[in-house]
Length: 88
Image 1 (cartoon, rainbow, N blue to C red):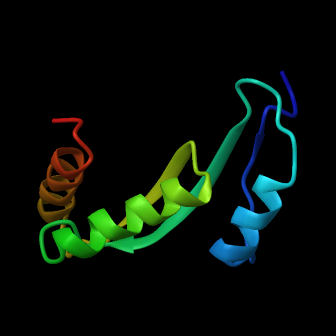
Image 2 (image 1 turned 180 degrees about the vertical axis):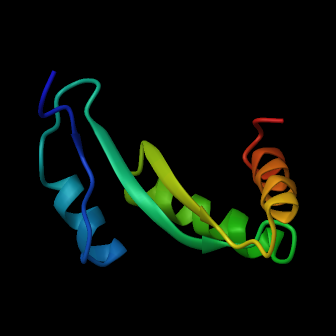
């Protein structure tokens, strides 16, 4: 079904929170926010803080971008991200 989500860009998180607070949304409506580059192994506290901030803003889904030097490093970063997010 069309129109069941929103993937905003170019809007600051504070402005987005205000918009979401003042806009009724139907049940099941998804708000997808991008994380920006994450380094779960190198900065787990920073990643956790960023994810919590996105969730507090109203994200129901987060599009994660992972910093990695190699494909193996990418897999390790994904595993670290999953652990930080309670998915592992």
